Amino acid sequence: MDEKQDNPNKLRLLEGLKKASRDLQSIPIPLCSKTNLSTITTFLQLLTQLDSFLSTDPTLFNLSRSLSNLKTQLNNLQNSQDYCLISFIYRQIANYEISKIASTVEAQIQAWIDQESIKNLVRVLVEDVGDDEEEKVKVLIQFEDRLSNGFDRDLQEMILKSKIFFILESVVFKSKCSKRVCEESARAIAALVRFNKDVFVGQVLMGPTIEALISISSYGSIQVLTSLINLIRSPLVYEMESNGYILRIISLLMSSNDLLIQSAAMECVLEIVHFARKEAIEAMLEEGMIKKLVDLQRLGIERELIEMSELDEDENRGNSEETESEAKIGIEERGLMENWPFTSCVTRFVVQFEMGEGLEKGEKRQLKQEILRRVREASVSEAEATSIVAEVLWGSSPLLH
Image (cartoon, rainbow, N blue to C red; front, side, top):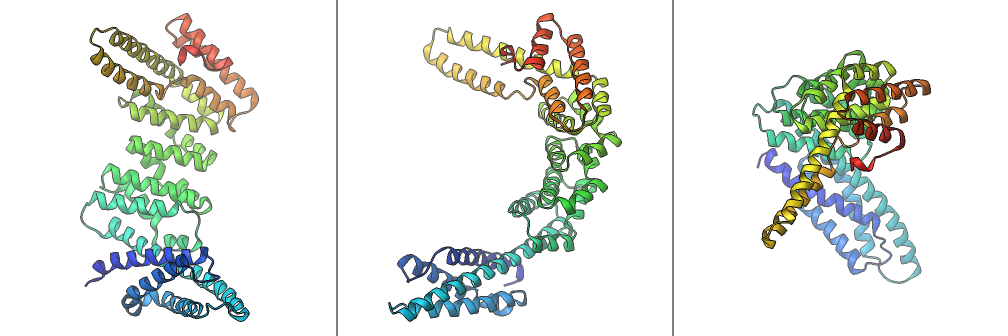
């Protein structure tokens, strides 16, 4: 059986052994109860199944030695189950040793799994000539899941030695992979930043990742950009401002025909505004940002009114069975409208820079007055202007909900 066939079986056994090692640490063993006997039996059975791999794989040498020590301690513990004082003391010592060795075993198994996973990630993204989208997405998601467990120095060393960041960056920036693979690679980059900002923030700021995400201009890529802004904060917003990237996000919000992309751009703009300087926000206003927000906010209200009217008509129909069914559909559609991404968007825009860290108090006041002026200009009626202005000044208006 070749290595590719061996590895899945080996991985399955090692995952089981890791869980059994964790159980040995968490279950006290003053005496061998049925539960504890079951834990020990499971561990020893898995160890027996792994014997062939342990004896032939040099990368598992240290693990093999630790497992041998642990097996000896477990056998000794099982052989000292009488109730005399000496046996009781010995069991306490053995329990401590078992817990300590089991912790080492768990860490060694995780290190082997990490090493194999990273080798597989590199192979799938770089060495495989085929374009198996599902396999690429699968290994990327597994990598993100591992990073989500928190910082691990040994894992970081493996990542740096394997140049994972630059491989992911290459996939996002210049590969011929599908949009889905590019987006998942970008999510993995964000996961690396979350894993250790000190190491990976600089690489994001100096590399082409941000430009690539904006060039892709998909719902997923803009979501990742928003996540990166949230993680990196002002340094990334300043970098985007100096390269003209903020106006490109505004352009997506203003002109995209895809509601999902517009909603992602809206969330990205709100994240940017929280950290942006006065000049950047003024540039947004000059691009017609407020008029667009007023239009989008109005569209949500108009759609909600239409759906409420249609629901009222359904309720007045003669056929009660048909009315009940169609009314249910109407209610579900109204539920979707409750999540309209541009509800109160003008107020949300103002709140973000008022609560943000990029502006002085006087700058916030000036910008707010300018936004209110533009709201009045963009409104189609005095009632609409009054409603939005009141919401911005005093809080959410019932007319908007």
